[in-house]
Each structure stands twice: as C-alpha cells, then as structure tokens.
Amino acid sequence: MSDSPGFMSGFVALLGRPNVGKSSLCNALVGEKVAITSPAPQTTRHRIAAVQHLPGAQIVWLDTPGLHRPRHLLGRSMVRAAAGALAGADVACLVVDGGFAAPGEGDRRAAWQVSQAACPRLLVVNKVDLVPAGAVPERLMAYAALAPRRAPFDEVLAVSAATGVGCAGLVAAVRRRLPLGPAYFPEDATTDRPEQFLCAELVREQSLLLLRQEVPHAVAVTVDEWQERDAGPLFIGVTLYVERDSQKGIVIGRGGSMLRAIGQAARLEIERRLGTPVYLEIRVRVREGWRDRAGSLETMGLGDRGLR
Image (cartoon, rainbow, N blue to C red; front, side):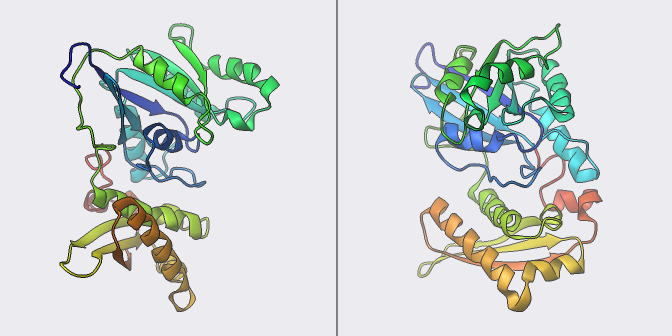
C-alpha cells in the first residue's frame, strides 16, 4: 500500500545521446508502450514519465529527448527538457549504447550533464545483447571512464531493453537509492501523459517508420477531435504538420497511398492501446518553418511548457 510505513518512491531521470534506447528501456520496465520508438534520431521530443509499480515502492522513470547540438528552436527546447529532468530527480542514469565499442562525443557531453546532478548517478550500458560476451567487461570500463573524477558513477549496470537482460538489476539498484515517500501516481497509471498525447505520438511513430529520411523530423501531429459515439468507433481527428509543400506531397503519396499506410498502421496501434475500435482521420497541413517558430511550437505542445 502506498500509505504504508516504509513505502519508497522517486523520480529517475534517464539521459543520453539520441538512439541509445531510453524509450525502449522505459517501455520494457513498465511492461507497456508509453513512449514511441524508431531508428530515427531524436524520436523522443518530450519528457515522459513511465510509472513502475512495485511492492512497497513506485519508480517514476523520466524518459527524455536525446542530448544533441540543436539546430533550431525545437531542438533547443528538447535539450532544455532533458536537462530539466535532472532538477528534483532522486536518481540520475546515463544511458549509453553498448553496441558501440567506444564512447563518442555525444556520450561525453551527456556524461558531463549527468555529473552535475546532486543525486546518485548510475551508468546504464544498454544493448549488451549486441556485444560479444567476452567484450562486455571492457565495454563497461570504457563507458565508466566518461565520469569525471569528482563525480564517479555510483554503479555501472549492463542491460538490454530488447531482451530484458539486466533490467531487474537496474530496478534493484534504483530501489536501493529511493527515498521514503508517497505514491505519486495511482496504481493503474503507467504514464503522466493523456491518451490523446499517445495517439498523436503513435501517428508520428508511423510517419518516422514509413517516410523518407528527410521528412520525419519536419513532422508534428496534434489531436484536434476526439468523439466517443453511442454507436460506432471512437472518432479521432488529427493534423499532421510538415514544413514544405514538397513534404506534404511525400506524406500523401501517389493517390494518397502513403497517407493511407500511415493511417492504417497508426490506427492498429491506437486500437491496441485503447482497446476499442477507432476511426482515424488524418489531415496534412503545411506550416513553414514551424520548428523555428515559438508560436507554432506552443500551439503544437512542443514549446518549453509542453515538453516538460
């Protein structure tokens, strides 16, 4: 019970460069898809809480955008959202991709950011399923060396979000460092984000997976209509924004083929999440240069407030 003596709870910030598997790790820990994933860098744009309920404890994992050198206003807001997750965190985790033999510059910048945290700091070497067994100890040592001498990691853990290897050990390491506290979320909650947010993200996820490489980063999705009907499926109307007319043509595709593919795949994911039939309508609109316009970012929930 969350009000029982000795109950422990806390917020755990996951930071790292793009594509190290922070979102996949959150989903694996919670046992449910609360954050979208894709091979495209900077898939995560928001700070998303993934809530894990344990006997006598609650861990709130904070998935964050990848730390990178921003090239536009959206990127700067994303980096601020990631750094802001450290404020008030009870545990900070630097997540790295163990599939790479040596750390890169992005890992070094992320390690410096995590070293600023006043709370316990853990190194989480993800994707160890891609590392030959004999190379794992050397790989852990290479990444552990990222920590400055004044702020070494409290613990180094090898995990695989894909296979679940090491995830129990990570949970145990975090739990040992949680303070006494209340349950911040009810027992049936797995995230702090509403269903409408995740539905928009699921549409964007399919855009990331199906569109050409240059288009997905210019895509934003908002939910404009959400109508529960007495008879018939739930109606969800969304707008998919791009920055140029040429991108709009790619998103729609010849005879609307690409837009249909995105819609069909997203609808199946949304129905799986909501457990109910859905009628999904996607409109495509051009909003030039929206990633560098503060007003557009706020309207789309991608400004500093929306990214928190």
